[in-house]
Length: 239
Length: 239
DNA sequence: AGGGCTCTTTGATCCAGGTCAATGCCGTAC
DNA sequence: GTACGGCATTGACCTGGATCAAAGAGCCCT
Image 1 (tube, each protein chain N blue to C red):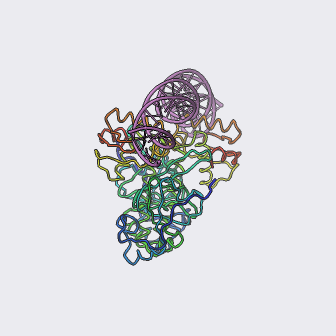
Image 2: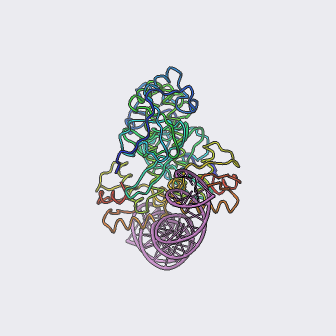
Image 3: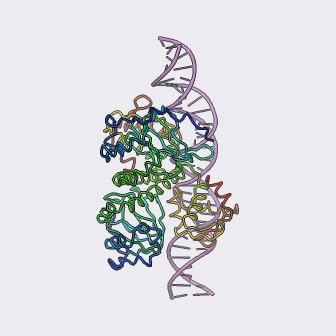
């Protein structure tokens, strides 16, 4: 199954430059002092990945945890026959490593060109024991993610295609901080949206068309949308 | 919407007797010393709930967090029109309160006669700050739950009815510690199973019948099953 | 032990979304 | 520009599970 992939490009070793980092104030590092950060830096390395490249596979020993610095990453699970469920899209500032123990419980793949901070998991856990505020931050993140997972279960278990797509657009816009009416970039393709929403690519496409015809959204190129009527869209989404 | 329900019976106040407690070694209390436990006890009270009684509603201010001491509790989310997604069944030793902040993000209802330990949330959080090992335990629980949520997303997004029911039976047996071939009690009704699996009651019932006809399970009364062929069932489940 | 109520099973039909199959269009490379 | 390749859209048809509608158990209560 898993021929070890072109597992991304590793960029330098220790030299992670945090002072200039875009996510210094949003990622887990935001709760660390300069000296604490220095220790974290010692177990960190910078990783680059190009679109489509796999960071790790479900089932592999979990050697690293990550912070997404730039770009979008998708986490997914596969069934034997290739059916795929994307369990989440991660953006800058997000942490990868809340759900797993010694083995990855999902695979991770770069959607766009991506920069990450990789931390060796074993020493990271040691650090966690020494910095309760870091642990606290992770717990808060886990809590938020858990709530998001529950919401997504409602989407997958009980919502119609139209409701799903509407929910996705609103939530993704929110997450990217794009206000209604502004151009929202969808870095993932229709197939990824489909595999996130438990639909097929055709149904996603048809549903976009329906929402467009109803004047709820405008499609701009194939990877941008503008939400024209957020409140009506929210009503459809069931939010 | 939410007329405050017959919110369970409150049994005594402070007098929580931990020394005899069935979950002293499995619940969050398992990581606390006797003196630490004494402090926890001071913000705890024992709560009883009979089948169908609501512990709290989604959206309500989250005043308490809980440990399930005995019985089964279901957590669920509703859409306006009544569609329901059950996001989890909790059993003895489980903690309720990982996913929410100041407001409950789901409703909780007793499936069977249930005993819980309720902790006032505000002082519980203070305690959390003082006991990093307690926080660590919560993080571990959150991690496990998050992984379980992801697995359930795969079920809801990508599995067929037969695969869903097979997965449910195996996972629930596992969780209750019932070995294959032993009688497995299903305390929830078909409707609850349906709302957990994103199906209808009829489809769940039909699927049970199919699995029975194929010799994979035996139904004993309406709320017990015996898994006759766990490996074939696992193959169907996609596990 | 019988009566009644609720939950479950089974049957018949329907439809949202999947599948299969072209066609169309955007974005890139030359 | 324009030609090409991959993604997205659209169309026609199919099907798994939903919906609607009876029967058939368990199980509690008297």
